[in-house]
Length: 115
Image (cartoon, rainbow, N blue to C red; front, side, top):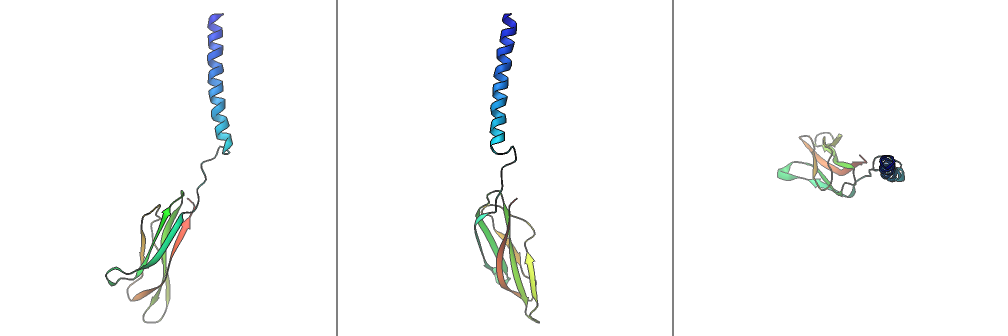
């Protein structure tokens, strides 16, 4: 009888612990934490050594990512060219994109995503 009682108490303790964990999961729907767009984002024209482009950065990633974008204009014919950095960045890192040769930066910007 003693053995059964200790097994019953032990299984009751395990059930209580597992039940508490299940309640914690249910509080946020049992899903992964929500991600949001980065915040505190800035962008500017970026012209190191005479190259033309844009630089962007965000102070907080909030689980999301960002990258620099730029609209460039060809000197010869005024054609507009949209460019975006290849790699997505997170929290405080610079994202840089350059215009093609024989063009200049018209409009810098930043693109964000919540993932």
